Length: 198
Image (cartoon, rainbow, N blue to C red; front, side, top):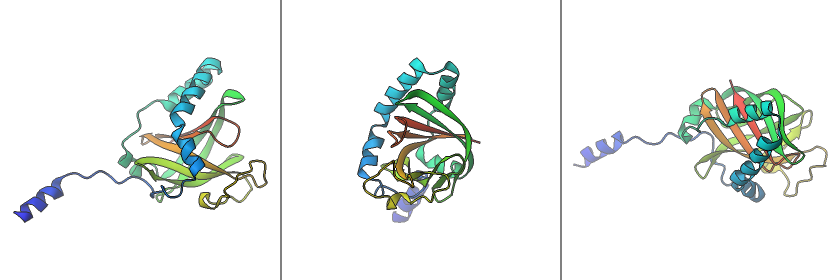
């Protein structure tokens, strides 16, 4: 009887493993608060962009947000590799700013790097409370970034080198499209949206 029960249990499908390491213990308290405000911030900044930005830019934004995120476990086979990444910044001084495409790379271990452009990013994609999250450091090209876990408690965005903590929700839409939504960045905008494509 026990053997039959074990055989039946083995047939029950198990959820696919999430992509990247568990990073619950790494996240800074203020970054956790920023991440919790994602829906509120995105609603406010999207309304502002829709009302005030150039229609062609709004179309880029809408296309970038189109598509339902895939279940958590499917990211493991999709995220690793090279991506074209395009930064959109919403809120504060301008309703919407869209940058040219850059190069990004995601490692099989969850490592993330924005490799080109004057503003760079490096960090880790992992799991916090059942969702894929990016934790990283923003820095200026030519400077040596600190790992996210080694950033000081007090952040001075005017310091040189300019090193700032970053937090964002990672959503995979298809094998060719993903996005990272970064609420309340330390610099420039109210929300950053990094669109990944290949």
